[in-house]
Length: 147
Image 1 (spheres, helix red, strand yellow):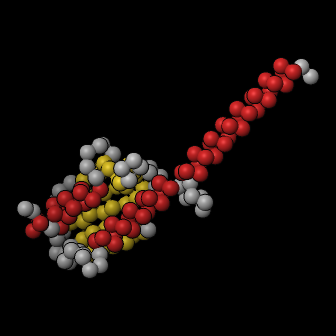
Image 2 (cartoon, helix red, strand yellow):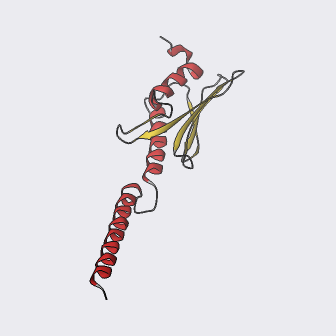
Image 3 (spheres, one colour):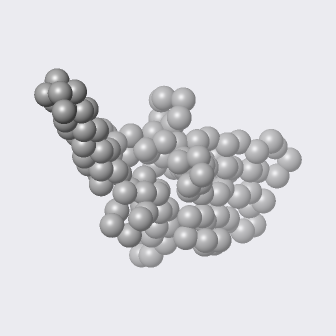
């Protein structure tokens, strides 16, 4: 066998191995051992955290939190005819908040996870999930909160 051909094949194999190892490292950073994508885990944890923040001893008076699934909850306050829903949509990798007040059009805002800042920010740029949820609560369910 010609040494140049063998050396060329050896170098090609080495580059291939390095590429596979780099891919493996990237996937290890993005996927947990159980096979869940880390982004999906972040989304589900955020839904859980938000639902927990809205209930318990510091809950807003009269607020009802309906857990539709592990990735979705709805907020209502009787007798107000309005609803806010927050849902993690794994298929698009985004948190979606919809708000609807009787007789008015439904609003929808999408949020993506900003890994550098470790929070969900608006897909369009300005704003983040907690701020927008607080604003939606005042706008739709708690007009008493307007300053």
